[in-house]
Image (cartoon, rainbow, N blue to C red; front, side, top):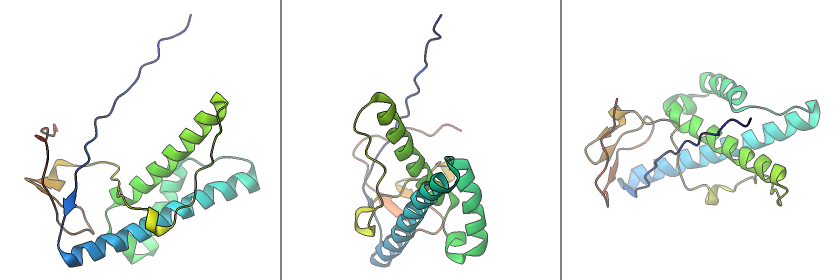
Length: 157
């Protein structure tokens, strides 16, 4: 007898953020670093598979991220949720790749990205302390003001 599959839906919101002119420069700097981390993670997974014949998990890469954060001051100054969001993004790309392979579709291996095409920061988790009114504060980034186009839901603890 087949067990019923449960599907989990996550509700996400995308809003445009605004900050000061120096703030935009800092965001571009963090985006470049996140793009480097994304490409480095792809390369790491590819090389691990070619040398060992085994895949690499997101959690193994997060352990490497912990070492990177201890060694480099830049990553210590940026929120861990920002850098983990990059690894979640890489993992999602690989899951979609393997899903397409399994379904017999044209798989399309995850691509390396130039910094011009890496335009979005993704946080692995958002805490209520990050959101104050219509402002979002993330460690290592400037205060980002949003003008919501819908009523924002209350975040439950």
